[in-house]
Image (cartoon, rainbow, N blue to C red):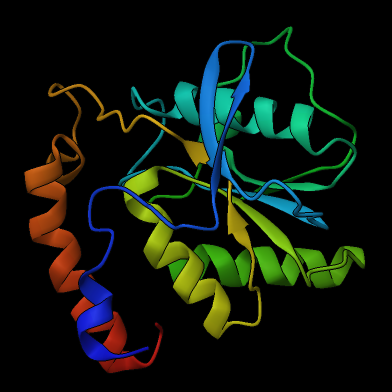
Amino acid sequence: MKFLEIFDNLTDYNSPILNIINIEGRKYKTKLDYKPSLSLGFSFGENNHNTKYNPTLAQTIKDAEIKFSKIPILLQYEVWESFKKDEKLGNNIYLVGDKYEVCPKGTKEVLEMMIEIADKEGLIKKSPLYTTHPAQAFRTLEIGKKLGLEGYPFIKADVQWPSKNIHTSFVRSPKKWAKREIMVRVHHKLKGWI
């Protein structure tokens, strides 16, 4: 990747190979002919327990399961918390992290935890499906590539931002996100993570 490419897709993820699909009135971007081996579900922001956006990510994960049924799901605990008690997903759910974690993990650390779980459980990692906030998709996919998890996203087609009342200020608007994301991507590029 060329250095200036790290500034692509700062607040949304657009790629000519993705299509818009509709699941029960909700629109997503994904690759139509993709056959993922597992689904990776990420929360959005730091200290994510019960943030306003995690229910949206939980719905995205449920809709990904409708589109790509019967694949294992590795899911950050804080998104799992957003499912209603009566909601069911398939049997192959693996939780990453737990409600007692005090310090939040970055995207790279979460991906490394997912790889560790997949290896331990004998899951096929060659073609993952990334379920995350559209603004986080580029970085998540690029880190995944560097870790040997080259895949495609399953993300909301319309970018939504969490409430202005949430604890983590940089996820409140595209402007705040882009300001922080530029610094994060430069850091990650210099470290060789993207």
